[in-house]
Length: 462
Image (tube, rainbow, N blue to C red; front, side, top):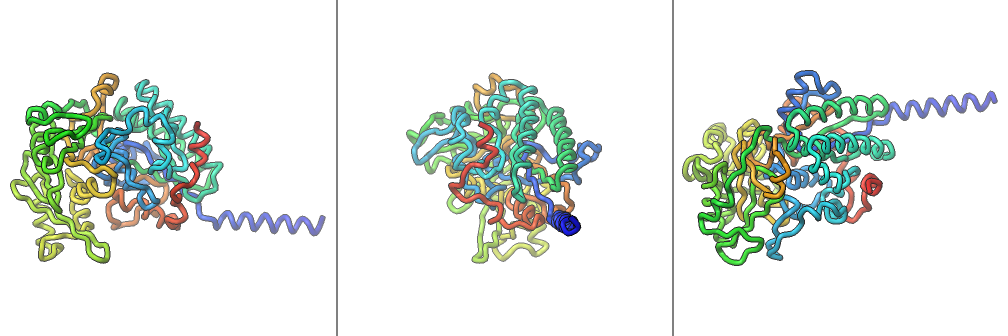
C-alpha cells in the first residue's frame, strides 16, 4: 500500500499537469444571418457577457448562404456550390435543378457538398419545416440545435469542432430583430454554461447580415418582359431569360444566351428597387446602375498577389471614384492603375458597398459551379423570390445584396487572440486561416478529405 499511494499521487500529478498544459479546444459556431450591427449593439448594452466585442465579417456576394459558406470554408476543402441558392439553373443541361424537395434529402442537401464539412449540421427537414411555424419554429429549432451541438461536442475529441446553426436566419426573416436578439441572449448563456464545464474557446461566425425593415417586392419580372424577354425554365433563344426564384432575398441571378447580358442588365435596371447589375464583358466585369457605368479589371501575379482596377466610364455606380483617386494619390496604384486587393479592402471596409471589387469578381469566379450571366443587387427595403413562399412568409428582414447591412456578418470570440491590434478586416476568405493560426492548428488537421464519412452528429440526427 505504501508503494501504491505514491504511484497514484504521481499519476494524478501527471494528469493535472498534462491537462493544464493542453490548449483549450475550439468550438466554431457558424450562425446563419446574424448581422454585425445587432451583435455590436447587444454587446454595448451588456447582453453578450461571455464574448469580447464583436468584429464585422465581410462576406461573399451575393450575401446568401451558399456563396458565403463556400468562401468561408474553402480553406477546409469546401467545393463550389452547385448554385447561388438551392434551386438553380444548370446551363450545361439547360434545365433547373434542386428545389424544395432537394432540401428534404440528406444525400442531396448535406452530403457531397460544403455542408458535409460540419461536425454538426441540423436535419434538413427540421430546417425547412421551421418556416411553417413563424416565431415558434425557429425558437424551438434554435434550442434543439444548441442542445445537439453541446452533446456532440462533448462526445468528440477533435481540437476544433465546427457546427452550423440555421435558426437565426429564419428568426430574422419571420420574427425580426427581437427574435434574433432572444436567440443571441440564449446563446450567450449557453456559452457561459459550456465554458464552466469544459476548457473551450468559442468563436461565432455568421454567413451574412440582414436588412431589418418592412420590405417591398421589386417588379423585376415585368421589367424584363417589357424589354422583350421571356422568363422561362430553359434558354430557348436570344429572348429567353432564366430567373431562379427560391428564397425571398435582395438579389437576383439571370441566365441568358451569350451576347444578351447587357440588354438583360439594362432591362433589370428599369425595375423599381434595383440598385445595380453586373455582368462579364470580355475579361472585365461591367457594373451598371442609375448612377453610371464602370469596369472592373483583375490581375494576378506569378506569386499569387491580386490587384484590381476600377474604371468609371460614366458616372460612378459603386461610389468609388474618390477612393480610387486617393489610392492613386498615395502611391498604391501601379502604372496601369491597378491596386493590391488588401489596399482596396482597407479603403472600403466601411463603405456602403464593403470590399466590392473582390466580392463582385468572386461572384462569377469560383464560388458556384454555374455562374450567372447577370447578377442584380437590390436597394435596401426590397426583395424578390418565390411567389409561393411569398404567400406564406411575412418578411421582416432579408439579405443578398451588395449593400452594407447585408454584407456584414459577425465574428465573436471568447479569446482575445483573434483580435490583435491593427489586424486587417475579417473577410470570408481570411477568417478561417486566422482562426486556425490562433488555435495553433493547420488546415490539414481540420479539413475532412473528399469522400470521408458523415460526421456522427449528422448520422445521429436522422
